[in-house]
Image (tube, rainbow, N blue to C red; front, side, top):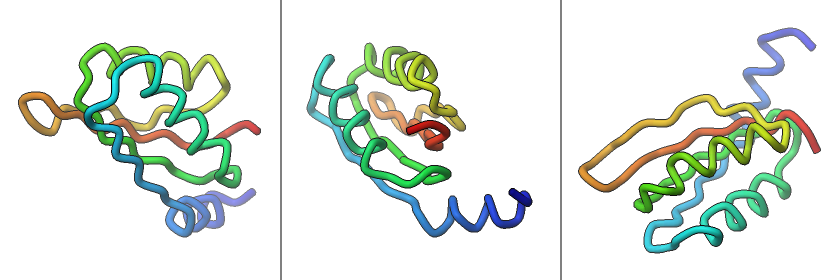
Length: 88
């Protein structure tokens, strides 16, 4: 698929998931269910505040064949993880 078409798909299907206040394993369960509902190429942006999940979610997403695009701390106790769906 041409890169420009791929980028258009990502822009068209972007989903935000706010899981602040949740702890593991609920953080990953919510993220996994959200990405399963998306089309291939879709981008999921996850906002969280549980430090352990900052390491667990990206690792688990990669283990399940998804592409982690970004992990960024946005506040003293807040992070954003961006994942692209690469596999059903």
